Structures are given as structure tokens and as C-alpha cells.
Image (cartoon, rainbow, N blue to C red):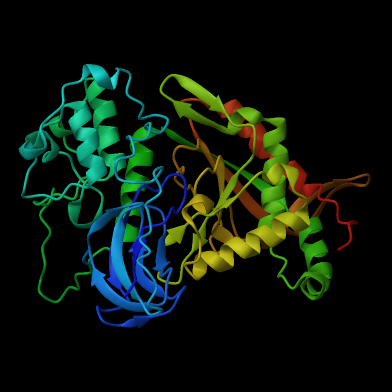
Length: 434
């Protein structure tokens, strides 16, 4: 009987290993081609891996909770057609033997790896699990298991991720070892502050996504000095145009017309005028991005947050942005995004107004340097200037803000960008048709 080896497929350029969170089939179960075998998690999204053949699940090579490199065989199927053995060969690009990828901007070592001593495999700790990738990086960097054991891990069950070890190495090369000082990122065996439990309180374990979000937020605040500027925006033109066209848009495109695409279009236009908002920091270098990739924060049903990216928004019209926004939001809420769709953002948008919040100071989504927040649209009495003099009238007003990285964006630039964004929204072309 033929056997088929099922390997972990490529899930995006930045994904090199996955964690098996739940097996959907047991050994001996019959499976069909394209039927889901296992649920997996990466450091970006959760997903499923499907069978590439029909037959019986002969062997599960890894258990739930195991970390498996991309290209590694994780299951064996006994095919039901009686043909000769058909073993899938792992892609050499994604196999375990693949060289360690170059660290991401901001974590790039400055010395040559060849000049660093190699630590023998047997010296690694047996009391804490390290993925093949982490072990490979540690060997090339000359890190002993004792030193590895001191590095706080942000992965599942305190596991050390690629990002954890690269940040540690980067800090060490700057003479600032994470193991020598307290870290707010660490999930410590002992609490930093004693917490009193009366016995009546509920204790809820953070899920994997919440732990990642927590670590990412703390890391961002530690990395960037945050400054937030605010502006009031008259939304009269946009509110009136959307109210007049939303039904026609739904009938013509089968999509809801929300405010989000309008905000993203205005952000892209404002970035075109002030391109130094659309940057990232790599050590002492500033990377000015050629495209405007807008990350939009989406709240998930379970209470967590994910930020899919509208790529190259500056070269899309309003209706193209609207279809992309709706597609990403729907698939985000149904856990159907792929890792590449939540990476590569250059500036972010968060719509606080969808929950009734008037204004806010969001945290920058690293390695970006700016995030725009929009609050709830409220009718307010405002003073307007007319030929007859000042008048008080009722207008739909929204408070917009931009939080920026003060290392590379000064207050003047942040204010200019925000006011240009408000100008594009207030001068929205309300004569355009669907």
C-alpha cells in the first residue's frame, strides 16, 4: 500500500516554523484530499494544514504543542489506491537544513557569523524546549544553554521564539544584555509584584494571541518614545455622501460601504504629501517606504486584535480600497488570513469610534513609526465663518489623532501630516458617484 508523507507547507515568507495546537484526526482515521488534518499556530495567525492525499492516517509524527519547522514531515497517510510509494520531498528552500534567515531590520547583527564560536549540540538544556531554528541561531552566536535559559520567552509555555533570541543578540552586541536587567516582556516563574487572591477572584490564563499582543505592546513602548497629536475634523461631506450612496454600493458591489476605506484613502494621500511619516527605523538608518501599506486594526470575536494590511493603498481608488477592506476584515474574523496579509504594513489605522470612543492614544505597531486613530462621529455645535459673520451650527465632528515615534518624527511633521489628513477628509469629493 502506498504511503504519502505530509509536510508543513510554506505559509508566507516570514514563517519558518509552526506550533501544532490541535490534531483534527486520529491515527487510523480515514481522510480525504484537502481535508484538514491539524490546526497550527504561527507567531502571526492560526490556520489549518490539509491532507494532500486520500487514505488512512497511518502515523502522527508530532504531538499537540510541538513546534515543527516548515518543510518537515508531520504525518504519514496510507493511500487507498494501492499505487507505489509516493513520498513527498520537502522543498529544499524550506527544509530544516535551510540556513538561518537574515535577522529583520533593527535586529541585524553587526559581526560576521563565521567569527563566532559554535556551541556543541549536547550543551543545550534539557529542561527547556528550544526549536531547531533557535538552537541553530544560538550555536552560530556562541550562546550556551545557561545563557539561553536566562532569556525571557514570549512563545507558548515560555518558549523562546526567533524574535526573542534576535532581540537578545541585538541588545548584547550593544552591551545591553536582557538577562542583566528586569524585562517587562518576560513571563517570569515568580511574579514581579505579589498578587493577592481572595479565593473568590477568577483566574484566566492568557491565550497565545493575547500573550503575543501583550509582548508586542510592551516592546513597542520600550522601543519608541510615543507622542500623540489631535485634531477636530468636520465630517459633514463624508457623512452625507455615504448616507446617500451606501444602499447603491451594496446593490452594485455586494459590499457594505463603511468609513474605513475613506480614512485609508485620505491617509495614503497625506503620506504622499509627507512621506517621512511612512518610515521605519533600522538602527541609525531611516527606511523611507515607497509604498503606503496601511494596517487596519480589526477586533476579533474572542476579544483579541489583528491588523491585516491594505497593500499599496496609494495606487488604489476608493472602491478598490473598500473591497479590499471588507475582504480582509471578513477573513480576519473567520480566521482565514495568511501570514503575509498581516505583515509589511508601513502605517496603521485604528477606528476607536466603532466602539463609541471619542479619542485615544494608540500604541505604534512596530516597526512602523505612526498610527492614526479616528474617534466616534458626534453631532456638535460648532462656530463657522460666513460672509455675514460667525455662526453657530450643528455639524458631525470627529476627533482624529496620530501617534508617532519621536525618534524620527518631530512634532511639526506629525502636526502637518495630521492637518493634511483632516483637510482631505473635510474636502472630500461628495459629487463622485458609485
